Image 1 (cartoon, one colour):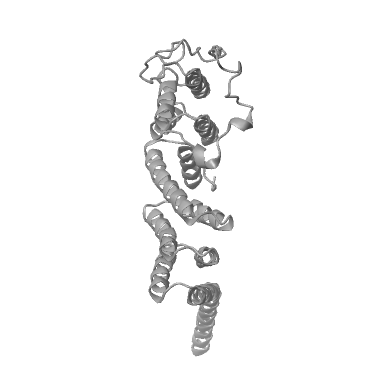
Image 2 (cartoon, one colour; image 1 turned 45 degrees about the vertical axis):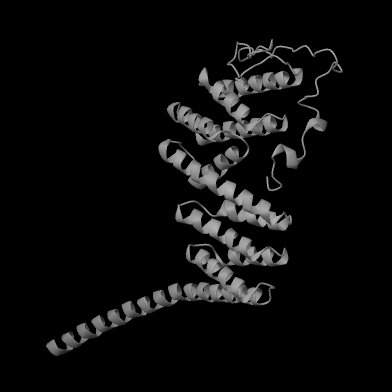
Length: 326
């Protein structure tokens, strides 16, 4: 009787072990199957990249050089599909081999500094799709990457709520590209943090600042003048709305000075709201009031060549500094 109970107990334990073992086998099978499929897909993708390179007009040395950069990018976390797409577009557009390497090296450098590669890859794909000159693509990539690194450091010092870090870096980097001086952007982030502004509010104001920066450039204001305008707009205000209004007023006053063609010596400084620009009779009203009307000197047509609603005064891309990748 005792032997029967022992045998029954031993049988039950064996059954349980077999059941547990079966579950483990099933779990391993289910987890390794998708992994194997992903690995097989990556191998197929790399094989496709090698085939594309083999059929290209690049020299053997250049093919090996590009493949090394592509492989390094994949090792850094760039998807095989993305790498393949960039390479195919480069071959189709007959991009110089060394510039293809620069494409991937820029992305690799960003990844190594903790910067998302997505905005850079999108910039590359946009340029290739539009068949933009490869030198302009390189310039746009370099500027985007540098601005993203600057913003990454700024955000490390500011406490911004409710924002996705990758999205914030991408959008704020674009505001720098559009002409917002780094010092101004840093101050805006500091003010916003102190006032407890949400990311949505910060996104809105930085996009508006970027629009003002583009407009200032289109109106013919030089980079150093734009920086002075943005800086002085911040001196007496910490309201984000008033800062933007001050920039608008200072910008239009500066344009009026340029239009007047005054021969009086002036140091080029732009003064805060409520004061006059040196060497002119142009005054900048306080925020909330309309800019002072400027009399056009004799010899002009009687109307200002600068009009916010007149598209005919805008410069072409090559003069205004705008990018075909914007």
